[in-house]
Image (tube, rainbow, N blue to C red; front, side, top):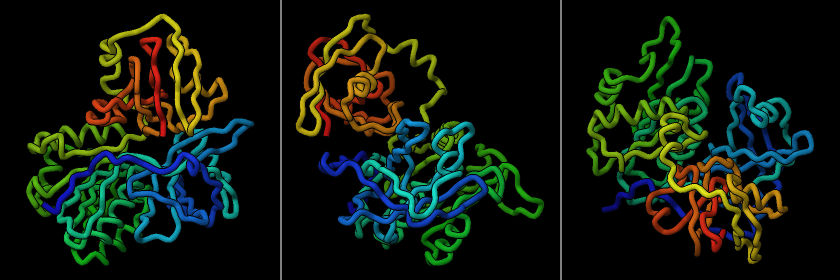
Length: 368
């Protein structure tokens, strides 16, 4: 069949071109608390796939701080790569960027990464149903533009939840894409605090609302439909529950998390499995060099490597973005969090150094 599901994708690329210094071409005020940073691409272009993110490395108070932001641009429709940054309460980097970044600035970034993506092919015929909340629209915007451009037989529907009408990121762009899509794209806005004349759905997503929404969107059947979600944890868990009530199988649902989940976290920690109270030497092979260092109990492998001055790739440091992913070639280790990896990746021996701890003295990890 000319239909492919969203899937984990090997980022590839040489470790020699992991970092770039990009010039800010333009800063666009999307809402009162969100900006889009548009970059001039490097001389050889920036290789990325819709749904991936860039890690921005920002010097603040003498420290280099890393944060991952999804690309809102499409490599097929946009000449300039761009990320959107929404203020987060007490957010160090998001507030710094919103307050300070301007055209002409230079920002160090790490190569595009992320697994919330797919292969866009002209022969695909599928319906991509998306649930977005707040800044979770960012990768969904990129995926929407690429789908409409590269897959003439596919359609897309976006259910986009926001606090109020003024907090809708890309509001005008979404309407323009919908108007020009010739019926292939539809956006349905859901507002918590709807204005008096609002005719769309309002309030929290619930079973009744989702049932009515599904009556308004095309039904292409399970074989040709995938469901994507990106936004606050509560919204995504709610949407997953509602989809399950609609008999949508879990393997049809794909999500991108911006922060480490807290729902069910205590139960997960209580059953985390093996622990160790012993320090072990760990060997990491990266960029052609082999590094061996001692990891103390309770300290992640990545944290130890960084303390030793070893510049390993990383971004979120919470087990979600997979920027620190490597392959365990010997030994045994445990991870505090596995959400960023697929079951297939785990079976193949992939691990995340930012949440990984050695359990044996012969741990060796290859990165890149």
